[in-house]
Image (tube, rainbow, N blue to C red; front, top):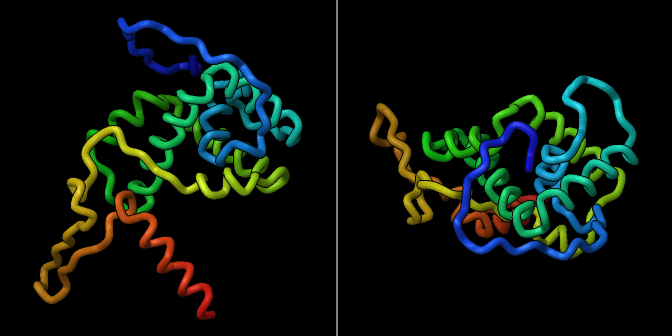
Length: 181
């Protein structure tokens, strides 16, 4: 259980995952951040080594289990994508705050995650999975893949691609721009 989170009670049967060794290189940046948040990583401002962050990531990953860690990481990444594009819905924000009530701890976990990604890298399979997003609420596009933006001038209005549901198209477009440079 992550420190400071609200836990849902589930009446279903409980299954326990067998704990296999955790290879940090096989975890995405968001998975590492979620694992750090769930670990015993201190909240204060201190400098820690990559080895210490790695140990906390392993601890948090074992504490959550692979399935729950990946589920939370998808939701974290979905929240990040909507937030950075200014498309946050109240429902997604509220669920995010329930899941990660300690905002500064999540920032620290993201910083530690970024350090381990830069030092340790990721496997090719992990890189392929790294940008995936998930939402546990209403997307601003309502599943259509497009979001209408209305300006004061009708000519300034238009539709943008949803950064969640059309992620692959957006990434492909960015790759063509980079290749053209």
